[in-house]
Image (cartoon, rainbow, N blue to C red):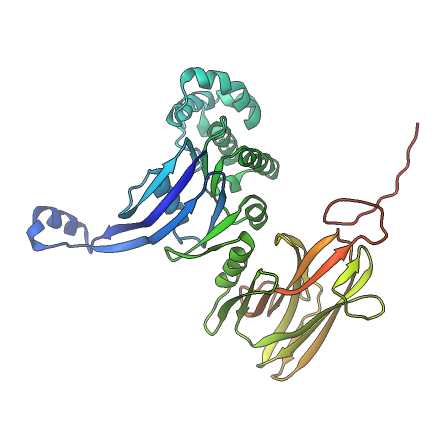
Length: 406
């Protein structure tokens, strides 16, 4: 069983005003330093217990890849320390150091030995590596003729040919096709069940929430937040939309979940109800019944354009369905402060039994990244129960008819 301890980790690079400053600093050390420090990471501390899965998220340039390089030892820290127990497999960059002029098979032997495998072990594992990578005769062709997806397939196959105690994966999996991404995540899930400790960088919210126990948010080289994947992803989603005059707030609900609200406040949701066919507000509803999601909005400042969107999520924060009035071709224009609007979305509640939440977004266009008037997670909670339908499993109710011939 593997574990990771990161304590006070920091990384800084020296910046010199011109190319001769480095030489002058080396030749004339008594004259003092000629450089300034550019901190990429500062004061990062966290632990991964054996068998735990943790995801790292953050915008480009937040320091995610640098952090993984420090943890794996490919880059030395300026401050702090890292302790890892167990056998480690890391997939940090596309190709994992493959030599372009050597064949895929030759690169497998080189990469495998770098991971600590013996030649005999690689000989034994080679059929499985070839089968999982599924690149056919290209295994004996030079890597320079590979596509990025083929390199990814082979690199992942080698890194995970034997279950490691600790698996560290950067965003390299994002270059693979949908089939291989699914196949890779299934292997990761299987290794997790067998006790592998996982540290992964990904912007895939669904993958993060389905695989990880916890998430860590990096912002400007610092640890901004850590918690459940749902809470951290919601905060990250609000953070990337934050603009001048906007705010981000998180509160804990009575159910113990973290609710994230962000935006400029130029428009706000004042009430949300989910109503049955008779117009009665309900929080517990039957599978498949017709419902109306009623949302009341108040405009706080003059707005040239207003779009309301909603997203239904399951109890794990997985996105079930979402749309907005931009995509429905019903945005509102030229609104004044004090205007009040009531939206009514009608649809069949074709969801499986479970608890669900509604997220609302008030924007000027199809996403909240341009003008985020208000983004509110966990704005409304409801429960779906199976009162009179045939038994089924899953998050969607799609009852079929069947014809059978013998």
